[in-house]
Image (cartoon, rainbow, N blue to C red):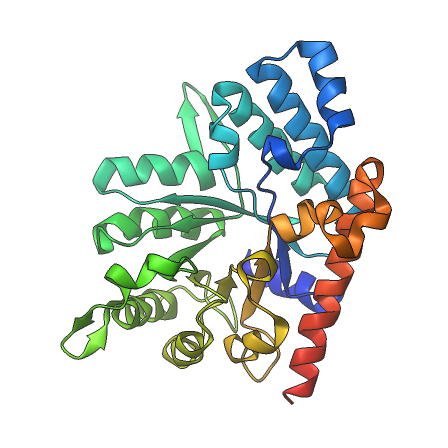
Length: 309
């Protein structure tokens, strides 16, 4: 799957990911009213609004982008109905040939970790038949429990030709409370990066490993260092746009081949119509605003990479 992601990045010239992280406050009133008219002001109605919102954005942007990243928490808040909307979103994006990165941040040990891996990336045997659960192409994983929490995910990825993005240095302000702590003179995030590189070298998809890393756009200097620590790992870079990251901050996340990183923007794209720069589109044309925001992001990152050559 890492090879498909690279191929789509090269074809679209867009090393970006659209984060499908919907909140009801992002969803225009006309979408909500339509869903509530059919299902009432219920969890089912909210989930329907989320699904219709996602579908319009995907329809307007799928030809520009290689991948999407739905954040499962935004769906779980609506209970089982929200998880149904999550699954419908995953399936619809895959029908558009988009790579789907499930932002699920799972991580446990033993059979529990194996069950998470099967549920999101693998297949479960039910009698004489097998079924894919959520069936994402990649998922995000928390490495805090160590190698025995990661190996079950790697095993399923090997079987299914899928991939991981392992949390290394996250974009949130308090990430340093743990991730920056020194151990034998090195910050913890560097040690995690070294481990990701070790796991990755044993699981190559081609020129890059299918074991990648998450490193926030808000920490460009750490990103530069981690790029050298993990030369064969693809880096998923959250924190662009709404969290402050810009194209010029991101060049060090990429390798000299122009690959090695894929940058995520969530509310900066899906709620673009609420920004002054895209207000002309209005709520009725929210997905057109999202397309314009994608085009602007591609130009920003592409321009920064070109200037850095």
